Image (cartoon, rainbow, N blue to C red; front, side, top):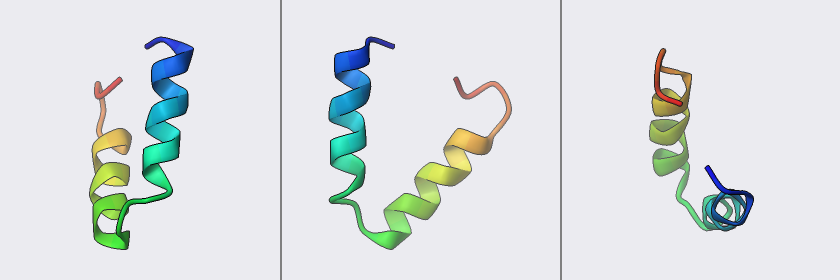
Length: 34
């Protein structure tokens, strides 16, 4: 992943709802997701 994409993605995270954040965390913590 490019740094610029990652930065934009992080910026989007701050505007997510708590439910979306939890979903995302679950996705990120899943093995083989990255």
